[in-house]
Image (cartoon, rainbow, N blue to C red; front, side, top):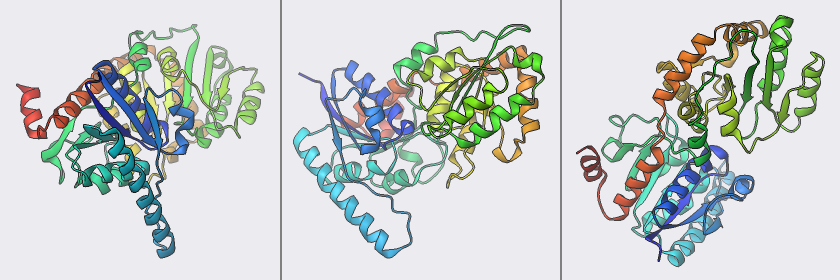
Length: 375
C-alpha cells in the first residue's frame, strides 16, 4: 500500500517540470503514489516523468485586456477546474503541489475548493503570475530564491531551494576540472528548453573574433532552436570547428558537469542546476521577461560569486569575445567561481520540499513545520 497520494501540477516547460520530477522521485522513494497534472506541451518531458498517471488539464493565460479573449480564457480555465475536480475526486490526494505555469491554476484552485492541503513552489526570485493568483488560497508557499521573511505571504513561506533531478545530483559528484593552458576548453551554451536565438547569432560571431590559437583549443557544445541548427553549424564550419549543436540535450546535467564554462539564460532551474553541479557561468537573462525573474535569479548566484550577470544589451561581438577569451586564459578564476557556485547550491531541496509536503498533508501549519525543522 502506498503511504499516500500526491498530485503534482506543473506548466509544460522544463523549468516547471524538472523540479516537479525531482520531487516525484523523492516522494516515490518515501512510498507515495505520484500523479501529474499538466498540459500537452509537456509531452517531450513527461514521457519520462515517474507518475502513476499523467492527467492533461485545460488551461489558458489571463494576461489579455481584450474582454472576448478574457472570457474565452475564463471558460477554458473553468473547464480545467472541472477536469481537475474529477481527478481529485477519483485519486483523493493527501496534498497537491503546484510548480507554476498556467496549467497549475485549475488543479490548485480545485484542490483549495475541496479543502485539500496545497503548496505552490516558486522557483524564481520573483513570483510568477500563476503562482501569484494562487498564493492567497494555498496552505503553503515553498521558494527557490524567494525571500522567506518578506512579502504578503511570509508567514506561510518556507525556502526549500529548487529541487533538482537525480541526474543533476549524480553530475554534482564530478569535481570541477579547470582547463590549463594548452588543454581543451569545453564551452557549453544553452538557452532553456526552447533555445535562444541570441546565442545562435552571438556565440559563433564572438568565437570567430577570438585569436586562432584560442579557437584551436575550444570545444563547443551549443543548444540552438531547430530552425537555427543548420546555420549555427555552418558558421562554426567556416572556422574549421565541428561543435555539437542540437535543439535539445536529454543529458544536460552531464553536459554541465563536463563544461569548463557555461553561458546560458538564467531560468530558475538552470541557475539551480549550475549551482548544485558547481560550474562557473556567464548568465544572460532573457531581456523580455515580464517580471524580470531571470535577472533576479542570475543576481542571486552572481552575489554568491558563482556566476557573472551579463545583460544581453551589453554583449557586442567584441565584448563577448573578450569575456570568453579572458575565461579561457584564467583557469584559477573559473575554479574559484565553480567553488562559489557549489557552495550556493541546494542539493537537498527535494528532501526539504518532500518534508514540507508530508507535514502539510498531515495537517501541520508552515509555522509548526518551521519550528520542527529548525529545532
